[in-house]
Amino acid sequence: MSLMEALNIGSRGLAASQTALNIVGQNVTNANTEGYTRKRLDLQAAVRADGDFGQMGFGVEMVDIRAMRDQLLDKQIQEVKSDVGEAEVRDATLMKLQDIFSEPGDTSISAALDGFWNAWQDLANNPSNLTARQAVLDTASTLSGRFVSMGEQLTALRIDKNDEIATRVGEANQLLDEIDKINRTIAAAELGDLRTRANDSRDARELKLKELSKLLDVSYTEDNQGRYIITTGGSLLLSGEGVFPIKLDRDTVALPDGTQYAQVSLRLGSTNKPFEPKGGALYGLVETRDEIVPRYQGKLDALALSLVQAVNAAHETGYDLQGRTGTSFFDPRITGASDMRLFAAVLDTPEAVAAGIGGTTTSPGAPIPSVVPPVGTDLDLSAVDPNYRNLLEGSVIVRTVGPPAMLLAEGAGKDYVVDSQNGRIQFTNAALAVPGAAITVDFRYNTAGSNGKGDGANALQIAQMRQKLLANPDRLGELTATLGDSWASTVGDLGAESRRATEGVSTLKQLESTLVEQAQSLSGVSIDEELADMVRFQHSYQASARFLSTVSELLQSLINIG
Image (cartoon, rainbow, N blue to C red; front, side, top):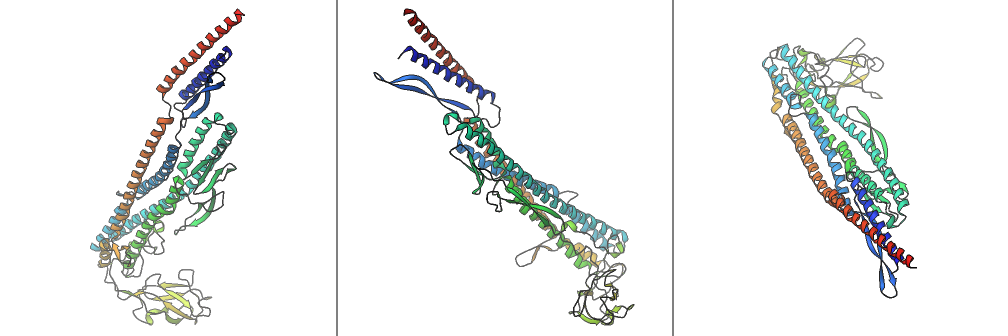
């Protein structure tokens, strides 16, 4: 080996030690940088063929700057992050539902129901007392107000989840754009050569991929240019050609109470087909918007409707202080909790509370044929049958025989008005209800009269609904629970589901933490280890420099001899 070859060996040693020291410096300064993976310089002995001795040492050769990364662990962390994103959304939603239900508490449905039943019990004990009647109206207003407030909050929660879906889709598309840019940087830097591996860009891309994984379930492969190809459910989101963004559609959705909002649905940019996420925060948001919140909203609506129907059925058969009957207590036209309200006839009118008991509610059996009376004359149903009095308000249905047959409308300013107590109908629209025209009249009525102002039997009947089975029909339609027990079961189900969700988040985060710790043991920067390497490569550099100095002196001596 010549002295010139020895100089080459020494210079290679200097270069390798200097590069290794630079890498140590990069590791140390990025020890606290999120997503950074520690780097290592791979070295191997350089050799050449010699005619006399075969292979001869030719110094050290730098093979690769390698990122200390375990791809299997990276994929496992990515999958767990998707599960965590989904679980966190579900947990947060269920906790919000518990806040809305506010059970137990002074502002809860349970407390308002107890107050409502107690007010009816007090009225049953003192039916002629206007204060007791007003207390019934006050507690009913409080109860309906809580149903309305809770229903509106649940609707608002669904709309919030809907808006958050749009926001998270925007974040996912932004991350895809950023990964695409990094893909291009990596492809340009590496050019298919391991020696030019773009490790820092790969770190940045891995960090973005983990953020994307928390939003939705993704899989990825790497093409021959080092670019990630990302899919979800087998459909492309990103390839070497660029990004195929998730698209948003907005359709107007009308809820039963009349509330409308623009509900978003998703499409795949690669196929233009509907997209239903299978994991990540986006899946959690779609699930909570379309399944979890509507499920509890449906239970609340069912409770409100059961309460309204049961109380109205009893109240319509009772008698108020004026001897009137057939009046609903709650507005029977409600669609659920969010539009629950008192019926206009009893609102702010304590005398209209039907505390007294009456007879039974029945109907003629079939619509009664008749004719429209002359203008200024009422149609007197009691003339047909003396029992046809005390009509249930809103139960009268009048149709013309035709042709064509028409349904006439009841109410002031419409086709007719009804004197329910006396069973009389006054026609007010001669253009449609022409005097002498054939009509049919259908209605419901009470078969007995009022027992007087001291009668509180109907109030007692309503108060005793606290113990009656009025909710939760089984497969045969048989009611299986009281209203209070039904609501307690709903609250219990929510508490159990929320507890499971919280435990699920905790378990998944613990798993994520374990995997991250395992990855960090390989890819994380250890300052102590780097300082040890720094000393090792410093000595190596000094030794190479000393070797070069010695060879240089020998070469100089050889030159001087000549």
